[in-house]
Image 1 (tube, rainbow, N blue to C red):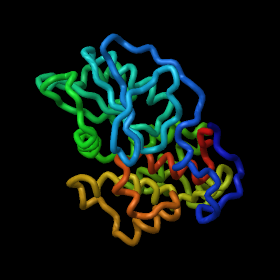
Image 2 (spheres, rainbow, N blue to C red):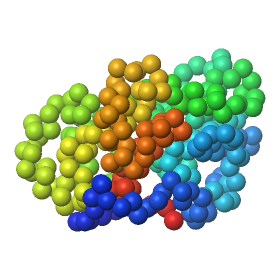
Image 3 (cartoon, rainbow, N blue to C red):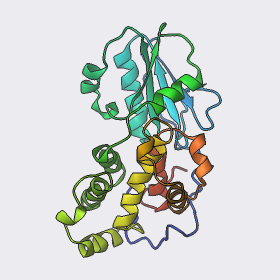
Length: 269
């Protein structure tokens, strides 16, 4: 999944990937299930959850929630991590008993899920969980900060220079120090031009759009973008209408979609 070096592509140009429609055709992957644990996939528009076929799990579309449930929480988290490593754009969610304490100790063992995990509290661990409850748990996650976005993007962008430059833009966009404290605007311009179409301004806009998508589904409405700006960003970086936000949860699909539209990563077949 290496960057498209020197790609001649405009964010306003033709969308060749069509990744919202190509969702279930990737190679098989084998999971090692734990007794009693179960993973279910909940894909947009989130009407029903489907039990994961561990022998034939194919690449889900961005915005998909993978929900884990079972008697051994650590084992379920391990299985969710396996899925998350394979497809970073999915949103992991786990069910725990209502009297279970904090997951912090377990997440120290599985740190990859620390900043992205949704948690559903259930009176009975093996009770059937309605899709609406799972989606509510995802919407209750904290909005990503610059470091969370940087860590996530770092798993998708192979080049270290590009990752570090993008990190500086994310920090500035979300209230951190100006990127100019690290390098000049012309330096960033030359560097970003080597890897694809997005400029420093584009990367900052993408970070704000990720936060916006979380904010409008939660109580953090003060972090939402003006409607006109949000519509412009969605058209420019995802080729989608603003109404799409009502059909998806999380922010991972936004960042993944922007990387695919910009041809920084490959779209699963």
